[in-house]
Image (cartoon, one colour):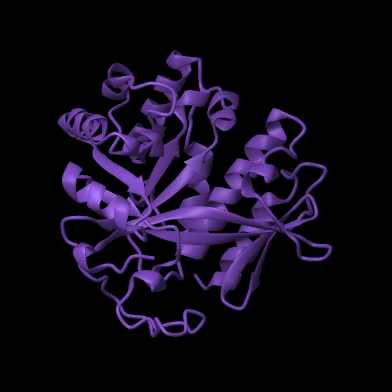
Length: 287
């Protein structure tokens, strides 16, 4: 289905289901991309590459929200958008809207793979049961299935552990993979990790300050069958730390073109011609 048809279809589905602060047709296509409106904001998608350290190949992408004011086009911090909903129903709508926006834009991304989408802790807690069902119904018209999606959860923000474990079970039953967000930020709860059985564990940056602690955490997590992920492939220190600790995945802080052979280093403002294959991990240039 062409992108414009998908946008029309999803806008038609939203009729009668949007909060009062929302326009009846939240999605619109512009120059080959999909944007969304929410509370006088324009929302877009940014995809940050996740690279396999062993091969240098692109494992997938983590979707990040971009937000701009409709008046003056001022950029907003993405987390500020999630302060706007006034009740749980509006929050669930926004969280699902953002993930649907990312899914639509990923359809036209040049290099695809496993797509990591963040699920806010409030969304997990606000949905009483059947987690992932409504999002699956939005994904399938886009040509995506849950097996292509990894949902990243911030478990530190959820004190209702039984509800969290039931939500994770619901997501897995529908085929979604699970990632844990910034593990080690509050504590190193390996017992809870064992119960949740995630596919990916994103390590908190604080763990990088101690090579011994990082190595121990990496071994424990990999023993549970999960891949370890850290951010910042464009910094030399993180690459060296990843190599020393056998980190599985690295996420960039920049779009894919900064990691691709052929970028004009003399003029960083000049985009490089796109190439389909990443450089080997060891050859990535330090920022």
